Image (cartoon, rainbow, N blue to C red):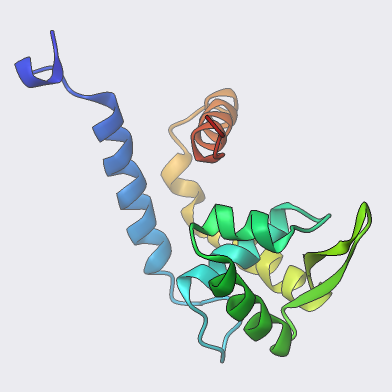
Length: 148
């Protein structure tokens, strides 16, 4: 039986759940980097860099954010001016640059994520630790971009 014949489409269920969680996250009263207004792309870049301590090339960051190289340059320049990122020479290619989270920004992201996780932890109480681990692994798999 297809979704059109009355069966629930699991992808739509997942999308609905993700949208609900997104609303919960966006309703967070405390924002990271308080006192500074950051765009969604800037926040996404900072959270991505927090997960990748070795940093990212501008090209990879542009891919992940689905923006142009020029947009990443502008985004990174702003983040650097505000002390959120550092830029260094790529260890494998001196012509390329690596963008890494500054220590201060790393600490702010860690604090924000920890506080948000604690606030939302009751939403996950119905899951066993194994189920929560499985959910985390599955969500990671569907959010990591793959090249076809």
